[in-house]
Length: 281
Image 1 (cartoon, helix red, strand yellow):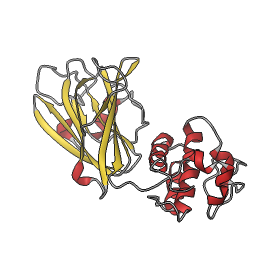
Image 2 (spheres, rainbow, N blue to C red):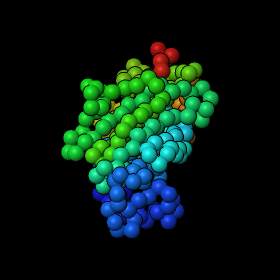
Image 3 (cartoon, rainbow, N blue to C red):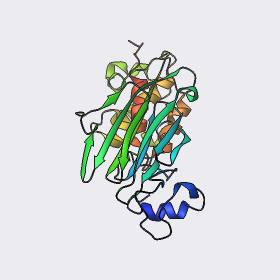
Image 4 (cartoon, helix red, strand yellow):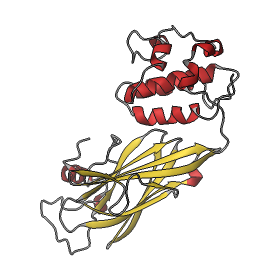
C-alpha cells in the first residue's frame, strides 16, 4: 500500500473508526486541541522496511498476538492483532500535520505464543526524513532488545519498523545447507536425490536447477531462502533428524512466499530450525 497518501487512507477509514481519525473535513485542525494524532488501524501488508509516518510490525519464529497502545492528551487506546509467522503489517500512521504527536508501545502477548515457543528478542529501526537509522536517536546500530515491549514517541517526522523474534524452548534438531551439499553426506538424503529438479518439489523458483544446485548457491534474498528450503526439506524427510516441520509444511511454507513474498522472514525461520544441531554423521 502506498505510504504517501495517509490522509486519504485515514479519511476513507473514518467511517469505520471515526473516533481515531482527524482532519477529514478538509480543515487543518488545531494542534493544541485534543485530537488523535496516531491512527491505530491495520493499514494492510508491510514490506519489511521502515517508512516515514508509519508503524510497521513483523513477526518471526511463530504466530503471536501483538498489541499496539497509543497514549496522548485525549487518553489511551489499545488494539491487538494476530500475526502469522513471517508476517509484516502496517499497524498505524502518524497524523501528517505539524504539532500532532503521540507516545506508543508495541508488545507481544506471551499468552498467545504456541506451546514450546518463547520470546527471544526484538529489533527496531527508525527512519527520519531520507535517512534510515537502525536504532534510536541515541543508540548505535544494531539495536536489539531482550524485552518484548517497544515504546517510542512519534510524529509525522518519524517512521518505525519493529520486528519480534521467537525461539522454541525445547529445540529439535536440524542439519545446515553446508552439511547436505557435501558428497560424503549424499547417503543421508532420504526420499529425494541431489540431481532432482527443484521444481519437482516446489514452485519453479530456480528454473532448470537441481536441489543440489540450489543448495550450492551463494548470496542472499531468494538464493538464501532456496538453500535453507532444501536443507529444511531434507531434515524433514530424514528419520534420523528430529526436525520441527514435516516435508508438507516445508513445501507449503516456501510456496506461500514465492513469488514476491517475505523471503527474508521465511529464510530466517528455516535457518533457525536448520541450525539446531545435526545428529547425523
